[in-house]
Amino acid sequence: MSIEVVLLGTGNPLPDRDRAGAATLVRAGGLTLLVDAGRAVCMRLAAAGVLPFMLDAVFVTHLHSDHICDLNDVVTTHWVMNPARKTLRIFGPPRTNEIMGGMRVMLRPDVEYRIAHHEDLDWEPDLDVAEVSRGVVFEENGVRVTAASTDHRPAEPTIGFRIEHGGRSVVLAGDTVPCADLDELCAGADVYVQTVLRDDLVEMVPMQRFRDTIDYHSTVVQAAQTAARGGVRTLVLTHQIPTPAPGAANEWIGIAREHFSGEIVFGEDLLTVSG
Ligand SMILES: [Zn+2]
Ligand SMILES: [Zn+2]
Image (cartoon, protein in one colour):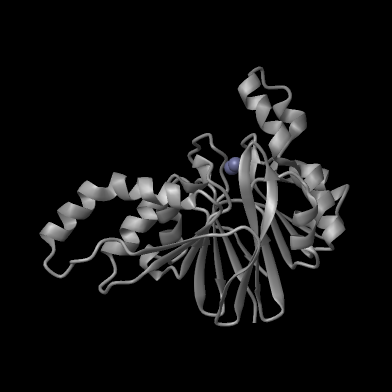
């Protein structure tokens, strides 16, 4: 038994032709789980053989736009493609209900149009939203999802997830600097997926708003150090800031290598990692 992790989108907030926004697909115990729903998530899901109505649950690490900007597409497609009424479960940090309430308002004309047009569609998107902070938040089919707080201030609260099944475990940390709860979440994990930043490169960008991002993301070095402290098997670098130049993977991996001796994977869209 294993857990399959598909990096759906490895991009950062800057639009890029080859990298979709933050989103990761996790398959375990027959369940199909989505973590974050950034730009073009439904296109990347389709490429991974998943249509939104096949999703069993969605987990949101935090409410920054680059992690949720296409969640409305997931909601609409999950709703309109389902032959029967099916609830979409969404787990996110406090204020997720606020986001989903606003989304319902945004989608109202579309929902009215489609219900008016399709005789067999007489229900609105059925969402079960749970605001979670820490501890076990989901347990089904032998799959357990644990949340822990992360540190991405002033975006707060933010959470990371550990997904376990059959003795395997993967951690989807989201955007965070190293912190004690993240260390606990990562302890002994098979796969640790971390959004990362190269401070040496970002510091050279002559734009303060871009340099501001340094203080609330893990640098590649910090991600490697977290991986080493946790004794994880595989470190996955994703959501790279700045957008890596073509062929730069080995340089990024080399920086992490100085601090972590396990497997290091440089994230690209649709790359699959086994937990
Ligand atoms: Zn963020
Ligand atoms: Zn982000």
